Length: 122
Length: 107
Image: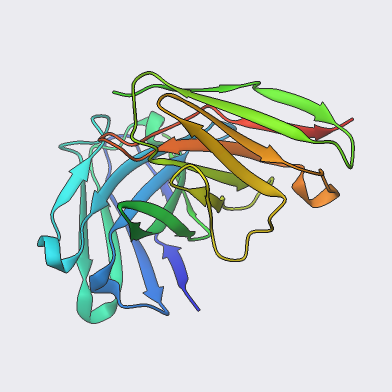
């Protein structure tokens, strides 16, 4: 059974840093693309960024709103995905979801984690 | 960036109704279109990918169609567990983008 469990959320001051983790199980981590998606309170879904699979050298993509401030990484030995967030702004307040992607001519989302809440406030 | 526009933003329907939600892309997306369902306080759930392919375990009352820039999600017979917010997403090009959501409420 595929499971994605996020952790690391909390309250942080503007300008601060936070590292989110996503523990993956039930599948071969290195075979899949992984994304981070966020949702501000009462708002819609926003794609944050992507880590491609091992076959694609774990390369990354980022949304313009977080590029240069957020960094995605992964640890194959721990089956874990990370989101290092720095220079946090109040508008980064959101639930952050770790998602797995599967391939069928294109990479599409198939599984979601339960999310972890990040609150940026002074 | 590709803009995804969903309509309506909300709708009221009765149990047993057939419901259709529309998603329009600002440019062609090669049918790389997914649909998600989200219930209050819960993580989204994947329903459909590649415009019309059902995710494993998703009931056949859900169907997707469309091409080019216009896509639809149809629920053939609305049940109490289907009242939720639905989102479309294009995954043709970066940045990936979502529609604003359609809230399906009980009439």
